[in-house]
Image (cartoon, rainbow, N blue to C red; front, side):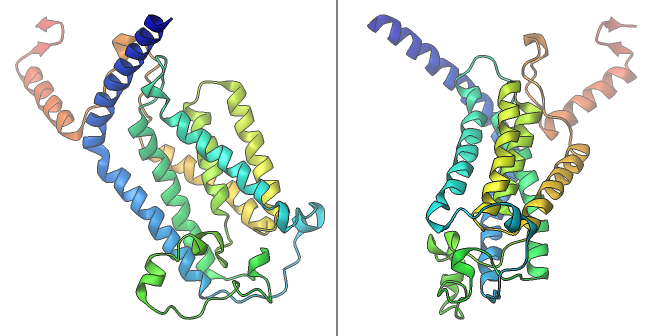
Amino acid sequence: MTVHVAREASKLWKKISAETNVEIKLLSGNWKYLLGGIVFQYIHGLAARGVHYLHRPGPVLQDMGFLLIPELGQENAYISESTFGIIFFSFVLWSFHPFVYQNKKIYTVLLWCRVLAYLVASQILRIITFYSTQLPGPNYHCREGSKLSTLPPPGSPFEVLLLNFPRGVFYGCGDLIFSSHMIFTLVFVNTYQQYGTKRFIKLCGWFLAVIQSVLIIASRKHYSVDVVVAWYAVNLVIFFINKKLPELPDRSLSSSQQILPVTSKDKSVKSKEEQYNLLNGITTNGVH
């Protein structure tokens, strides 16, 4: 039994080591995209923090979703966050499965470059929309009478730059159209739809996205319009980015077709070699 466990552990370690070497090579050529996407997550948080200073509480607007979907209540608001947590962490874990599984379709580094492209483009649109018009927040801490609904002028730049973490992140107001939770949810579900392999999980993903939409409205964290706009805005962003960027390499092809993506430098060298061969009448099959 001990020998078997040791053998399996050794195999797993070899898989992780081999995959790490592959991903490090990809990271060396794509780290700027990953870093830029991660930095923009902070910028997005900074923008959401800034709009809170502009927020003015008022009567909750009439909303069709509020009329049709029963209110969860402040004590049950955690249900929405729990569902989002399941979606978020499930996707993150899946994105790293190439390190431990033999059968894989994606490169983790390239996948996250694409995911961050989706997120950044969607978040830029979101920042533009919630700064264009500030609606009175429907969330409990954003309503009239709540001390958290408005913010006094910041006492120092650090109060803004540090986002008043964690309170400033969880108790923001004014960043409504459109829902950030739905951006992440739809980006993750769409990405698995494109690069995942299990049909049942794809169906579960879309089902959870619908449930998440209903729960956001039921917990009164957003108006219905914030969720509806997210559904078409994020899907359109993904559609146009996929049109613009090349398709990610598919690792599920036969081993002879599994070629590590080349860098721009490699492409340049390869192009020069092809031109040289062409001028000298050399083909891959030999000399003419």
